[in-house]
Length: 424
Ligand code: UD1
Image (cartoon, rainbow, N blue to C red; front, side, top):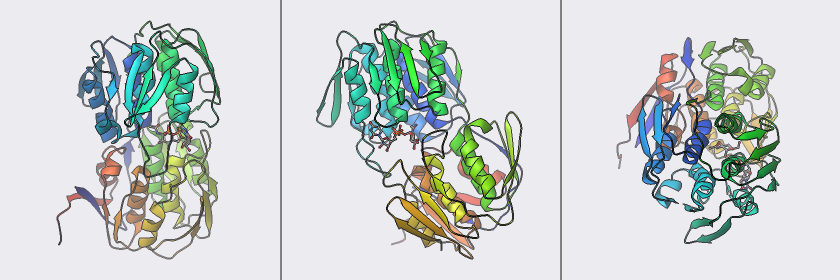
């Protein structure tokens, strides 16, 4: 197992390029199951989650040629409709193959993802939507078994809660269903928008893209022919590097980034005293010498993203006053608090609210990554902690950050990846 060793105190400078968005690429890879024609996806990030989903495609009988951020995918010979536990347990997003497999083949089995570090994360809304479209679903032996031998039909789906994955699964299923599907209270994250645009570019009429109400005119199982698709920039990776600049009081430039997608994070950084120069594809951040405290509440897009909550908490540890952070999406997404406190932070938790109190200094220590975004929060804190911090269990980080230590080193941080060696 690897860990990251970080020597705190270095200023950052220069520019780095933002990779493609993992959370956009995953549903798009799943959507390739709606086609039996070869297609090209580019700007894929080099992260473990992408390799895991591509592996699942090959286990289903797909052909994948993956090189240098580009995958050529051919799903013309899918011969299995079962997403096995060994893959789904590694990555919850594998549940995204449920909608497309069921819509194309009229049956499939997908392992239940189970709980995950940040909370319970049920898939009841995915299943309810598919049932409304005519699927018969049962849970047996840890698997979701879904059948719709005569295909799915259009339906009116009203989501009780806004769900990104649930919206994506339903859109993919609706694309091959017979008739019209309307999704009320749909998610409108940029990643959902890109999925809809890719399916629309394949000839499926979709109304309301980018809004909370989507109408999809299904093809009645006529398979799709996709255009080559370039994955949008990763707004969470971009936000994480803006936080790295803020916490180290360093001006840096991000290239290949879309500022529209990270407006909520940039607004908070502005409240904290940062200034920005923005062009079509670049953002330069100018942080203040003293970070101002802010309060924030996580919510659906275009609100403040839960996937940036941990990183902002790390920056706010160094603010000159108290900040309050409320997490409304996931019930257990504060596991980084105790690890940040190991570095000397003073954060108090009550339910889903964290109070971040000001402190003079952070001090390097051994800390453990607990989930993907929590891992990057620990790296951010380590950049300004006095002395050496070792961040263990970075397999979480490798699931979603493309070459984090390479990019931070290029900006001037003292960070190296090392191999764990048993000490006792
Ligand atoms: C996606 C993102 C994840 C991000 C999250 C919220 C991917 C691969 N992952 O996850 O990084 O943190 O959106 O922006 O894109 N819920 C239910 N029942 C369901 C589905 C969801 O109750 O059937 C609840 C969840 O527990 C959570 C809320 O709805 O409280 C939002 O979850 P959802 O938007 O579905 O998150 P994911 O798609 O899993």
